[in-house]
Image 1 (tube, helix red, strand yellow):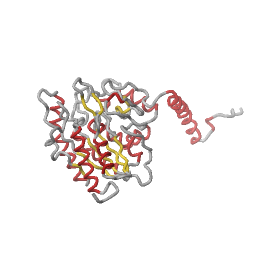
Image 2: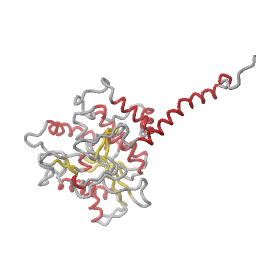
Image 3: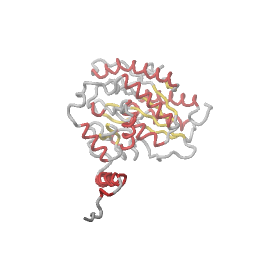
Image 4: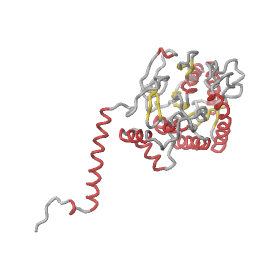
Length: 352
């Protein structure tokens, strides 16, 4: 009896393995291409926050700024999000020759917002913007600032943002200012963006983060009932995780050839009748500040101390707000940051 031609069982096992792999990979690749063609960057979620119309949910980062968003009616004239998702003017993915790029990561205190008397959140002049003005005033050219602040971000969100969005921009300095959100209760624990402990899982996360199928699978996992803590039952970041996040930020930043820099996070006394959240931040931040100092000492990371003299300012914070700096407070932070960068020689010149 003759054997049928084309019988795959007659092929050597490596060839059969390749064929089986192609049978699985090829359909998935076609689905991925179709999804990329048919969907936007926030697939499968695109609903913006009610109070922060310039942000949208994201299955990998938790949420992020909407690239290209602009609405001058929101506050400071010219407020915009550039095409890479950062507040401010457009920047190239690679900095120009001779240009020093400084990325400033943080939460709403870095992005720059304030709450109006009627309860609305509006953008205000940020300390990265005040720093840019100081650089211009001092005649220091060739320094590009990236305001990577995102409202509500914790160190866990910042760590994912660092690996996915910041390091590909090849910064020379990466400054971190986090704290207030780490100690507050998470309104959606599935969006805590905790970095996987497994090296393999981390590698897959950072390699596949923009894949539509991966984002779809991650969203499905986030929506499974019973595997995540209940809302408001846990903080966004535990103290132990806070330390680990800082250590990983330093590790990744240095591995890229950039310099890490920590900023402290002073807060004021809660106003009479303040919400419980303000009291929790006031109580929880000192321990995080101790952790940051310890990590900085152990790993030799430079810090910027803005707390000294901060509360002595006439109006360091906004009215009835012990977390978000006023214009005066933002200016103070920018000046202390400028002075420290000058001392370290990280602005491209040693002389003040």
